[in-house]
Length: 279
Length: 90
Image 1 (cartoon, rainbow over the protein chains, first blue to last red):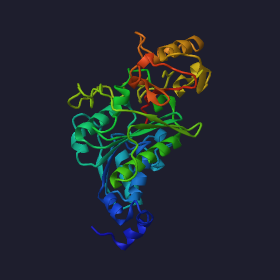
Image 2: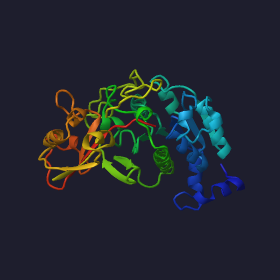
Image 3: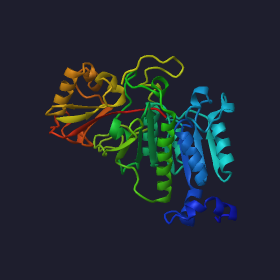
Image 4: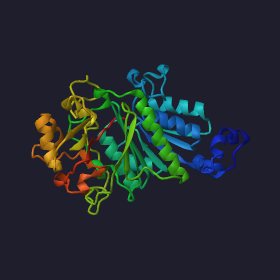
């Protein structure tokens, strides 16, 4: 493929970088990146990846835009309330950069559809809002052998880590399984400072682009922990766990499974009112 | 003394302190010492049988205690312990 003069101009600040150049920009143009969740983390990631000229962006989300989303989900605007998130997202991505192909999956990720969808992509970005889906994405990336950029946000705290299946620690190596219902708060019940989604989501997009370009040092075997109140980043060392049920020496998870309740671990479900929260 | 970093969800139990300095020789000892000063914190960290909950990770100087000696991991003056629960928001 060759870039047009307009594309060379559009991507000139990338092409100027020795680490990217015309060759790297072509890698970006050929890349296929999947965003699971077109919400808080998915929004900034989608916009920067679109601006960067990623060839194909996949959006998975079964929800419609809610007024409470707009405080942080910058892919969606006020007139989008009540509209499909993937459709709203596709419109913003293509308005920003018509070079980008957007594949829409207006469905919930399940053990039944995950591997088929993931197989079409180079990198997966986790922007979902519940533990069950985070574990499902982790497991599906392992079985599909796709790099995963995991992110999580709550209140003023953010986490991000990159997982290269079979090479670096997976989410299950670190957290093993979803917590029991009622023990961990969700954004729905505990709140989140909106801009935190931007900080973590854009780090996820940076990691995805680095993987596509094959440059730098990925955030593997390290979990970056951001405290917005202190504006402090900390790096926690994580390791592959030989006892990991998924990628350890004697795995007990040998195929994808649905863990039932998508809001397992949350004190309240999205359709109910917040109440007192525990850890 | 060791420094224990308290994650946001547990700060209501530590009078909103993000870090507390305590004396403890092991992680198990640290949990008991925290519980004595901040009642209720142990139940958040450990299950009914007293084992650390599977979705709460504890790091000593950024190393996961599961790769050290678990609850028996020794602590020495100046160590920093981080309690890191999973978070799911997106």
